[in-house]
Image (tube, helix red, strand yellow):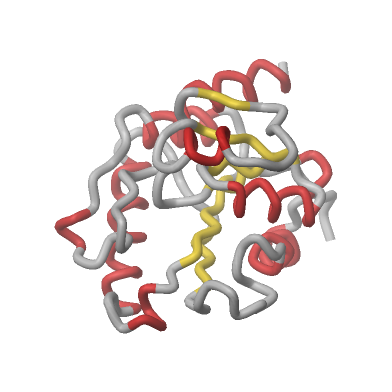
Length: 183
């Protein structure tokens, strides 16, 4: 097996696209956050593997289908490709909040699965997201947690608990920082 490599793991709703109260329940509701997919292109150009780690409990709640979730992920791939970007994979947990399921953030199951599937070195990797669940999952997996203030990021920043160390206005700014750290 080849050497493990660092990666950038991204939350979806609120990081790549606008966060809606019920989540994206129809493909037409998907609205990219300005600069997000260009940032994925910059990561790809710099040699960073990128995967998406997202909770999608709307499936279990019956408000969205797996087919719609997959269609949204296909749209993400298209938008990234338009900017020279690519995703290794999309991981989603359809478990309900409070279920204690090992794959659902804030637990690290999806992150560990991505690392096993793609040879990611989690201790040199980043997870970028807009919620305290994202930050907790990153810490539990050994990744560097990065908070963006898009989506629910401002709420997460104001919440009680350990203050996040790395906070950026959006994914584009977070990627600037990640790329600067590597050089």
